[in-house]
Amino acid sequence: MSEEMLRIYEELLRQINKTYDSYTEQVKRLNSMWSDYKTAVSNVKRNWDADNILLALRVNELKASIDSIREELDMLKVKKELGLVDEEEYSKLSTELTDTLTKLTNMYDEAKSKIDEIDKGIKEHWFRSMDVTSLTTDQVDNMIKELEDSKAKGEVPEDVYTRVKADLELVRRVVQALALIKTETKS
Image (cartoon, rainbow, N blue to C red; front, side, top):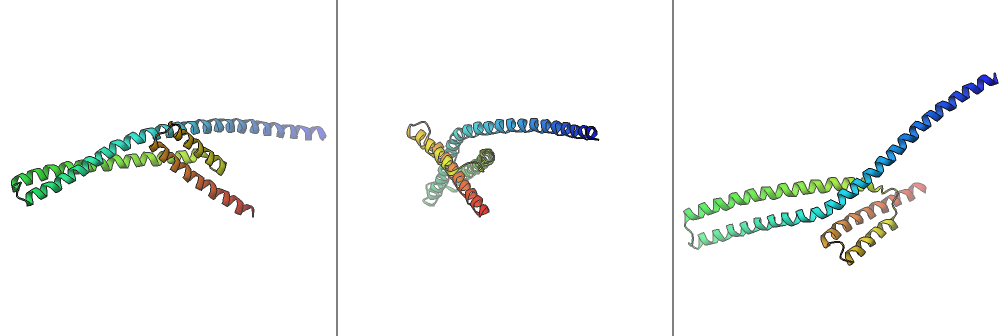
């Protein structure tokens, strides 16, 4: 009877070991994938912070052109009211400027929408990859300090500094909120 019992438990132990080995391997793969994901997100975020500045400059140029055309339209109206431009010329120029304004405004809206969509998507992944549940406020404060030191050394442009600091301030608030929740849960 005891040998039979031993065989039963040896078989059980083999099954447990087989299952253990399988899940241990799966957890290792998940950890590796998680590490790769975090690295990829970090790289994309860093590249985006730089590219976003360039795109913002271009979009601001487009916005300035739109504002310039609006001013030109206003000046054209004034010229018409003062009699400096006849009705036919006014109508022709006004139509041209309005068409251009409409096209540029549509381009501006489309560009802003796409930039905002990319920014939102990258931030979602960035926040997910950060694992804020394991971060402390001190760690976030250290990240902010490193960012400020890099800015002081001239390694980080003002625009990047402003964007990244705002992101880190948001992370700090999330970490603080999680710390409060953990404290309340323990009470």
